Length: 274
Length: 260
Image 1 (cartoon, helix red, strand yellow):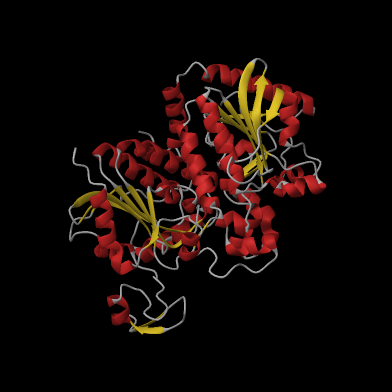
Image 2: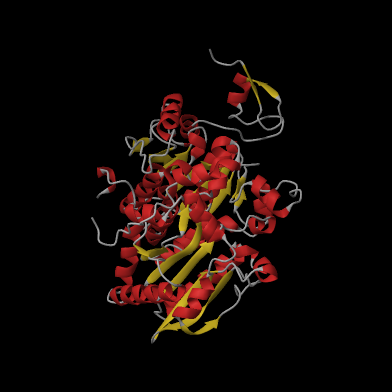
């Protein structure tokens, strides 16, 4: 048994966990960024037509290492959250993220992504502006990056809208975070024609950090059994350690490492093990 | 007993089955390019007897032991005679050898789970190693919920396979059919060098109902149809079913490699 396998003492109900991480009192991605990085300089816009505030991206220092930091950000509440679509990015947001990731690639700068979203914004102009294409393009281009990429799921990893920042060499999750192909409400609607059975769906979906670590879909769980500042300190150390490891690989090796991570995800049956 | 008549699912017009079949399962009243089985699709597209299936034996995975999944899966397997929602293989269209993938909306809504993702990936890897073009027909309700995060990961896996394949100087033509939505739309389907769609196909990321709830308004006329996407600059062309084969041959001819 892997020593990193977190044995959560109290068996926490999944639905309770979900309500907690969706709460307005839950810390947000940029709260963590403020703790872990220095000199964060925000870069705005998709260099085309719009600045989607659901995505906050820029350059910062992780101790003395310049990194590109990209976050899905739900905002501080009220109007601030509203203008950020409550952390649900538009195609313009994904294109902003991509622009900055490609720039990081150009300057051989590692990329750290913070995932926290109910999902990509489901709107008319989001569709008209190519939400599907924007997500697909991010998956494709992230696979091509020749720098270390680490993604952290802070609270909600909402399906494709989360994965668009999640094609990384390593994926971490905070202990209480969830990461799912569909929301429990969406799942319940499809299965039982009522979203009221979301709590049952949330058990079926196996979306907790513990589940995903056991499935080897994520690489590390960051404990939340401590104060916020300690969570950040632990995350910073984990990031630094992992970055130093990854920075030993050259561009091609990083690209292949990332390809293999996603290539061989699957049940441990023979057909997936080449 | 075979039905003698069929009702168009789009406009409700009733057709004589024979006439409907001769019209390639397209409604002669509203021109909706309706559901067509995988075997029929292959028959319409490829040179006779040229289709050689690969990886057809890959079937049922239950990675998160989702309640009811196994039973549902085998119901579709028995109904369609297929092992999964996608069929992949070698084919020849006109003068051109290709790798061909066809998603079938009749098999669990064409949803993508681990095996569909694996077959798509193997198809692109095979095409890379054989130096051949790829044609993919998509039809999907999205990622397969019953495999949880394993389904979501297939989006990344297939997109990465397309990226690796892009180094090969061969064309990847993606054809979007009704419906192409969710995680399939937001991965390999929208990564074609050339993206075609059949007329009036529903194509989009989020479901119309969710969007309507979010914005609290009626949706625009023709929202999320091929025609809407064309107007918004998102796809290259709409091709009628009766023109699909010759269009693909023309595109393959443009991309033929004289160095091979």
